[in-house]
Length: 319
Image 1: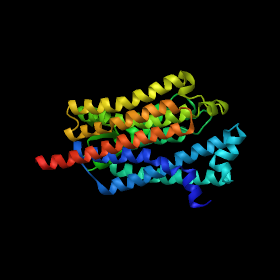
Image 2: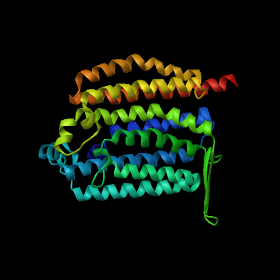
Image 3: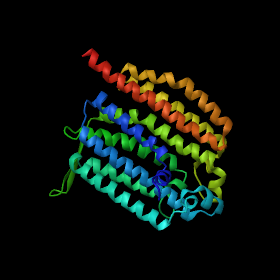
Image 4: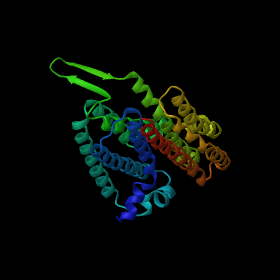
């Protein structure tokens, strides 16, 4: 396997979907919680990237193994197209899975039980998203799981990693008394949820756009996604609603004091997003239609990240 083929197997271009929750989680940790840990943040980034690549490789492996459409299996799936040995791909997946798991346990040692619990949930959903007799991605819950685990899961874990020295939220286990305690700020928890929702929506839209485009192929390969149940027309409407909701929660966050005023600069992306939504609706189910979900995610979250960075500078100036 060449390095170029490996990058195709793990679909390296799609990793931007996990990089944005990481960057925005890092900036939100600094701007709202005022915490930062460079060493653990870099280690988490490595673990996150390896695991994300692993999940994508599992997806391609499972699609190859379970495909009923021979054209897809031999000409579209990277394993068949590049004539890769499925056994080698499986062993590579196991190696990356073990490596990301080891890094996760190492981080949990420094970060605490809550990180281990949240990481375990993300790990479970990530693996069984495409693996098993009934993968989560083949059910009408793919958008919820992809948006939730990446948009909120990664975001929240970044906050936990950066607040390791002075925990914002803490789960304590007492094995001798068979008890546990969870402590943290309710206001902080609400802030994390509101700040992560734009990420949840824009990432969920990537899966939704993929399902809108691939509905006919998915039916041939017995993948019954959300679009299969609600139809393409309603799926396009949901795609637009999720994107508009990202702006709604950003404005809500400013109103209730989670964000500083520079965050509202994200609204400058609205004309671009609106144009992309119109083009997407006109082009579905053409292959190119999927690109608009990536463009929207990159555009919105680039403005979001930049506005959080400007908020940090603003906080420094007004002190």
